[in-house]
Length: 235
Image (cartoon, rainbow, N blue to C red):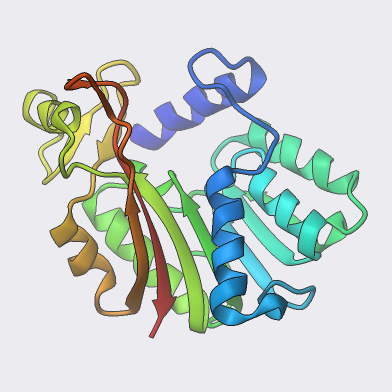
C-alpha cells in the first residue's frame, strides 16, 4: 500500500507539481559532492568509463548532469513512470545520453545490476520511504553492487535536534523506531539518528564526511525538516 500510494503521489507531482518545487537542474548538494570527490580522489575520478547508480532518480536531473559534465555511464531507478519518461526523453536529447538507462523499478526490490559493477551510488532523499526490513535489503544491495572503495552519496531526514521530526515520531508513529506516517501524504517515512547511521553503514562502509543541516529552526521554532548528508566509501 505504501508503494502504491507513493507511486500515485509522485506520478501526480511530476505531471503537475503541487507540493514540491521540482527542478530540472542538478542539486547543489550533488555539485558539492563532485568537488569533494575530485579533491579527495583526483580530478579524473569522474570520467567516461565510470558507472553511477541513482536510486530514486526522479526526473533524472542529477544523473543527466553528471553525464553532461563528465560523460559517465549511469542507471536511474524510480517508481514513477512519469518521472522515468521525463528522464528518458531528456537523456535522448543529450549528446552522451545514450550512456544512461532509466527504468521504472522499486528500490525496495533487489538492484538488477551485477556485483561490484558501480563506482558511485546516489541516494538523495529516496530510501527514507523504505520500511525497516526493506532498508536492510536495500543497503546490502547497495554494498553488493558498489566496487571496493566505491562511494555512496547519502542524504536523508535527520531526527537529531529536530523537534518537529520527534513530534511526528511520537504523534504519528508507524510502529517502527524513528518512523511515522506522514500526516498529509499518508505514507511511511523514516528519520535517521546517529546510532542508526552507525548501525546501518558501519559494517560495509567507512564514513568520510557527515554534514547535518542547520537552518531547520527560525527564532527557536521549527522551520523545515532537518537533513543529513553523508559520504561513505565501501570497505
